[in-house]
Amino acid sequence: MFMRLLDISLAGLGLLVIAPLLLVVAILVAVMSGRPVIYRSQRMGQRGRVFSLLKFRTMRQDADSVGPGITGRNDSRVTPIGRILRRTKVDELPQLINVLKGDMSLVGPRPEDPRYLDCYSAADRRLLEMRPGLTSPASIAFRNEEALLDGPDFEMRYVKTVLPAKLSMDLSYMQSRTLWSDVKVIAETALMLLGRDVHPRAKLPPHRAFFLSLGKKS
Image (cartoon, rainbow, N blue to C red):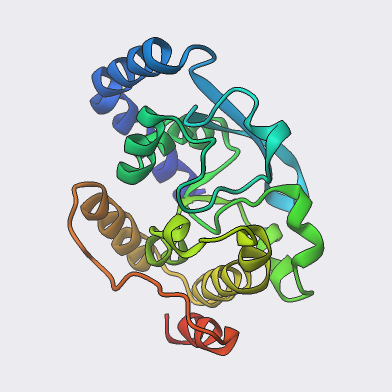
């Protein structure tokens, strides 16, 4: 209950503080790439319930019909303004509304597209027992995810290497999380949004074992 009250308080305060920024971004998206301004992405929430995750739209309007649910490096579907929003993570800010609605928490495993559920191991599925989060250790470590997904087979690379590593890291964190550790993750995320480098960025090595070791060390 306390964590939920903290989520509501911080998300509500955050929305009030950044309201002018949200308005400016909404106008820029509408002018430069048209409507809709907000993109609703179907994601898996707590207990597998599917909900609409909110983002500023950063891709062409037909993006879902011409490519996979994830984006790779230099993806042609991403708009010019979208590249800026993605690089700065400003496109994710509308998810504070998801936090207020109860779809998400401030800290928790990042919600995935339902199409990737079959890629979850039995252990990974324990993450679905928790409320998904706006940020997590994995989302900080993999903030340069698109740069790792290069080439025509980027979705396969995501499924085989990046996704298992992210799930492992988040599962390791969630098994030992505390209020203080959540506060640290929120602080590191805020510093990241301000352009501060808070953690080494994940690299894409040839073996999945490296990624799994990241989760064990978190």
